[in-house]
Image (cartoon, rainbow, N blue to C red; front, side, top):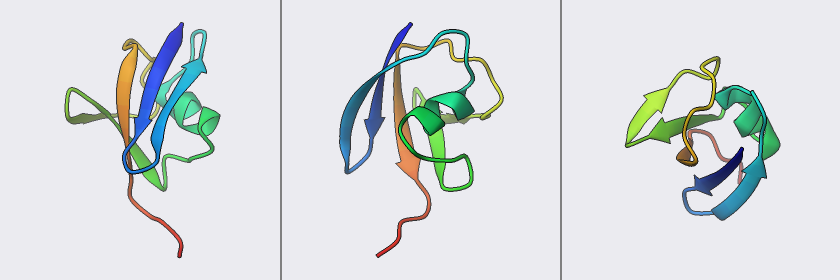
Length: 65
């Protein structure tokens, strides 16, 4: 499954993921559930939930600087 991941403020990435979780999706864009949340239709989804959507938004909660 191809998933379009919009990391807010950083751009959109296309990720290929087969049978993974939203946590796996975060890992594919070099983030962890401790520093970002996946949003589906504007609502956060648990990192251990299987990916069911083809378009998601990622909101970084922590950003170094």
